[in-house]
Image (tube, rainbow, N blue to C red; front, top):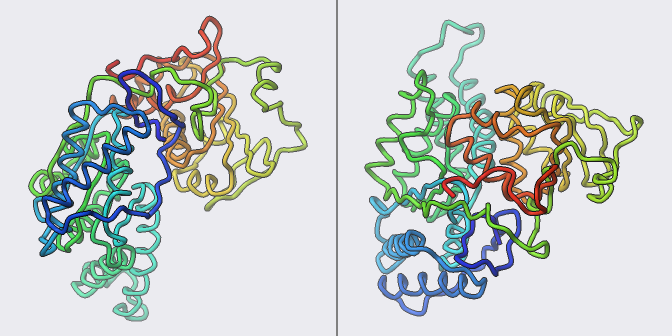
Length: 418
């Protein structure tokens, strides 16, 4: 069970990561759109009951919206999803991931795909680059480097290659679910616009979750104009539904037996050697230091032992690492330790941004993180945009914590809107 969860009185089994849902779906009992809508809602609510979860009013409305729109698209006649796409957004910890997972599992089709936006865009970048390189090689003349830029045949070849890359990734999917839809990079904005236009032009029902309202995508004022066509398309073609009960449910206490994945880790302030031993992470020996090369450059690790890896903050977050590095490292290591995290006085904006990106990856892939910090760095959250700070804060609240003067399960930071 994921940490994007809620309970009015806590009792359910919960872990520190979104649940890894299967592709098994429950067949609807009725062949009508109304019957399918009722079945989808029933299946999702039954799942909540089994997991001892109580949906709040906005969550019930989201389930109803998803069920109705999916039934319209998948029911008799297989009607066009135009106007039925859903953009589900809200602050972290409001239940978006659980709802999307339960909805995805209940869909009565095998032609569905659920993917984290990080992973999809990484694959799209790679596939599109290869396709574009091949397409341009076919239209460029030998010795024409530079002089051919801007030619219409090059523009058309590039556009066609990107569309082919998107089509090869989506295949015959009829329902596409994106977790954590976002855009922080101007280069991604252009690719996102093409991808969005492609999906809207096909009979694909698009469902997304996001921490951001459409207007806050690519919030940097210098580049925001690049995302405006996509924002307009979202508002015109998707049902934008806000999910915010004014409580970050990750900030609620939980039993040790209910901790799995990311939430089995600890946020520890200046831990002693004995405290580290209690966590099962004794200090590495200098001889264990090694270099890893997940993508294009090397990163020093203090220890690599099976699925366990230990980094120092300055090596992981103050060097030229990227989300692609973290995604590659996450494939081989299911327990990370990051030590030497500076307190607020010494934290830098670039270091905190990379730390937030790494934590996103670890959280989304169910990887245990033990974060060892030199001092309280809550004040440094102001170095991030408000929504990004709330997102990081919520993920930190999913961890155990160990700090002087703190009770065993007292959050280090107040939950967002709690």
